[in-house]
Image (cartoon, rainbow, N blue to C red; front, side, top):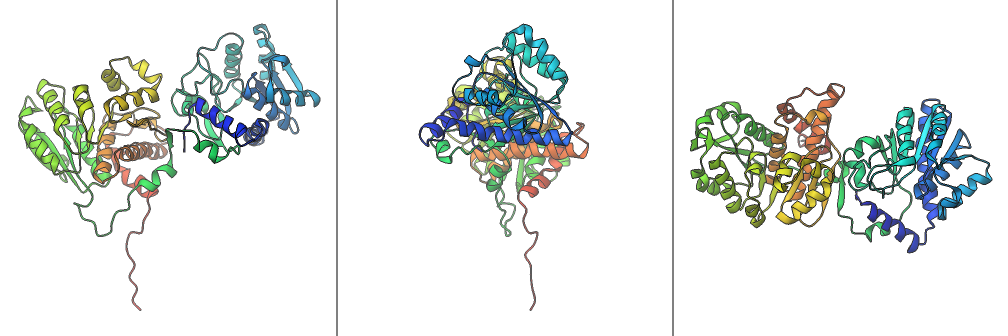
Length: 523
């Protein structure tokens, strides 16, 4: 599903109104009806009666006024306007005037000392509709608006936000000093970036994406580069496996890994590659540790390499480059260490390897960006925010405050697919396209989880998928595995990374079911 920025969504609305001649009031009315539907469901489910609708002076306020009109037919509705009547303009003013004509209970609260009255009203209410700010908000919220938002959160009432929780930046998902914590958010036409980046995702609660009848042609006229990854996006890209396939059919993967005390990382990458469907997995490891890998992952082909102090020596670079030529994909980095010999090995390999490459973990920590930038072959990097901050020579906070744009900028500069891990993982591409993942669970926040992901992406690369699609599928299915595990113990953590691997075939099978055998009939 397309994922527009707030400015792009505003442009789409303008096209619908100005070129397709759909009155803005119709779009506003359609939007209101979807929120009304969600509100009625909550009110009836919990046998609630009293609703407070809080409206700002922009289009979100207009939506709120229209919502109030429909709800007051069946429920006890109080409308609180945070703007004076003459400050409400255009279509929003029309809906406010209708409420006036219907003798609706409207309270104008435009001074901070009146917030105590709002709090009293909230205390006797059952449901709050948040229509204060829309997706275009940025900068800190202060004064009256901040006080009202804090009052909403402190009320502990059920809350539905209109389009986006007020106070959440629609582009980055960051909190503008304060923001409404909603139980449900009804967003219009298309999902917004800020709803799927944290903390915005958490503040949004359950998300409903409502079709308000904007023509598809209006959307197509805007160059939307973002995509929200869900089942419908992923399913068409999961390859059907030929029934006469053999181990060579399903990809040969080389994983360059290992150092003293870090043998588990490569094992997890190898295991996840096998579980994701790879036919052959090669492990290039320090010679002194080779026996450990042979015993632990007996299915893998172990390639013992010269080592020094338990880490692979850079003397092995020629062998590795030759071996890479025989492979369909290479994973470089899990558990390698950051010793000087490893640093030279990593950068020489990245510079000269012509095989599709996943760069992860320790390889990222010793990577020379000048060498990465010159690389001309398919490359995926998989940093967590700390690793990404080191690559960009900035603070983690700077990364987290604008994850999407940071990842896109880096991807363009370095000509790589950048998988910026974390809740709402961002997959950014050199052409400016990006994807945001919708799957995952905090049970994935465990040592070795990233090694599993690297092996999965490498496996899908080896199966012949396009680089960005291999990254997307790996990230999406990795998140799904976390959800499957969480369902087994009521959302609790406590799983090991190897247990993530154990459910990969189950998750793939649910998205890509096929007959287990060809039938034979004797006449």
